Image (tube, rainbow, N blue to C red):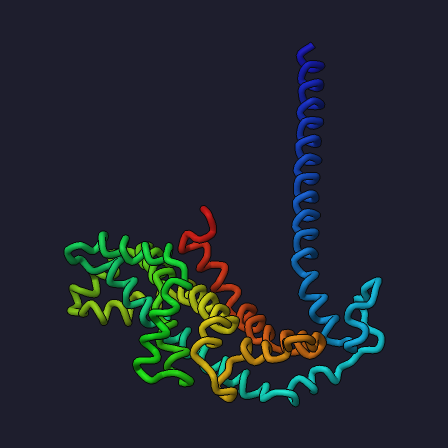
Length: 295
């Protein structure tokens, strides 16, 4: 009797285990199907952009839509560099985005180190006031910033494109959250050895903050590469335009050169794609360690 009961229990346990495995496999398969569908939906605009960049103007709005152009117009990528100083726009955008990213990392990391490690009266209140600026829309400060830039005589200069963009409460908050995870024992040991606060920041904190810096760098570079409103306001000289403002010239009052516009857009996203692929490992790790992943 005992042997029969044990056999029935083992059979029931095996059936339950098999059912749980089947449910787990079904759950995983459903998750992958949903994620794949979401990925396809997100990729459709980029696929359509690439398709349009290879079409003739007359085939852009044909019905039903053609995902595979017939014929394929590779000359659109050459033509877009001829109708405007496209290379100049790319160089301007690269110079501005790189400069802003570098200076932003320096300024934000210094402020974040002060808020995370230094002790001074009113530190927490000042940090809350600093964070409160995140609730102020950028359009509110647009006119004051423009008036300051105009007063300094920076219209149509790189200073106007770079200096106002290097300060960010978000960057300071992100790096501060990461700096707080660095053990205090490292700082205490450095102070015993006679290191100053700046030496600790430069030799200990920054080398350990690669993932967070990479994350902020990707965010900043992407935002500056796609920045449109501020360069549109402070730049009038055609030779000083950035890529987003330059591509806007392809949109006329009555006509839009969609193939050329999409060809230029495809070229413009390539640097961001390369940067993300290079920094992907640090980017994902930085998101997890700085608390932006929702955990």
